[in-house]
Length: 112
Image (cartoon, rainbow, N blue to C red; front, side, top):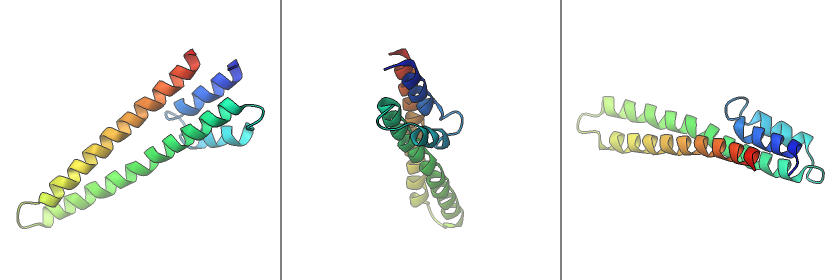
């Protein structure tokens, strides 16, 4: 892979720090599958990884708010709230894993 493809591919993954979702879309739009197939393919993968992260954050927030409201209004032991907070914790672990995986892929491509 040439330096330009490495640079674009690596930045597509590392854009999790700046312009997540937007930068991979720009790379997808500006590169073609014929001229820069590696950068195009990596930008598509980075886009989907960023999109999953972007969608999991409001989901976790909504579950957390719902569990808090349920826990406050429940008259007995809020087992549902405890389970919901467990799901929020699992989503947080998944988000951390996706974040680390994006960094890993960006550095791995650049080092190759």
